[in-house]
Length: 237
Ligand SMILES: C[S@@+](CC[C@H](N)C(=O)[O-])C[C@H]1O[C@@H](n2cnc3c(N)ncnc32)[C@H](O)[C@@H]1O
Image 1 (cartoon, rainbow, N blue to C red):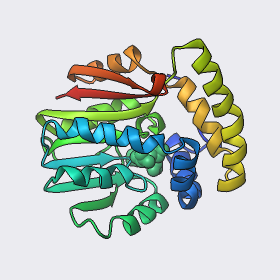
Image 2: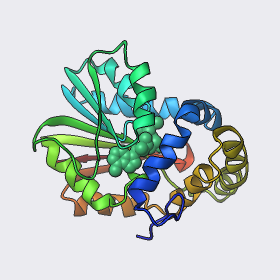
Image 3: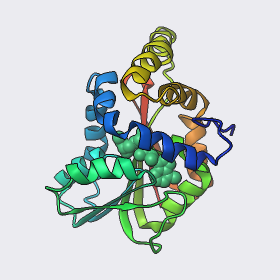
């Protein structure tokens, strides 16, 4: 898999990604909801409904960022939600937002090298995180390791729409409008050009299912959302 990195600075992809999310953290939530016209919230809610089917008690939210998914998961009344991220600034925004939710604990941590024992969690979730991993295969193996047997991994990630018309409208918006407005508001010139580049390069659909199976997951599912702009992947340990 070719590596698309935010800055081509010579640092590791992980360091560059952490720097980029530290830079955009103050405007991240606003731009997320603005660019997606609020649809990102519907996608996370759909993911949470699917997670709720197995009634998980211990949930790990990897690449939790500003904790939107972790907060949505409180609806499921789990005993514990641990959110981890490599970006301190994203976590700082998340800590403010999660003060009212004692069930959530946010920690600095790397999804590709998890600081938890094996068989710990009933569910692991990741929204818009795996595409930013330096080594996706290690991340998937690590998330499988910390899941209890029968536990499930839930991934929400951008994908590439199949319909010709939707694809063209979407790419125009994603590659022109989004970088222009993103740069203006976030003040990070690269963050919103890295986004469409990383989506184009990242495996989706069957190719991503293959990676999940390679990491040892079974009963894999792929659920395209909004014409395939995003996809939910479910996989069982
Ligand atoms: C696009 S944001 C998504 C945040 C949140 N999950 C959401 O849905 O809004 C991607 C997040 O992944 C984090 N991230 C990237 N690589 C990571 C890794 N290896 N381990 C943990 N977090 C990582 C970034 O720091 C960033 O906060």
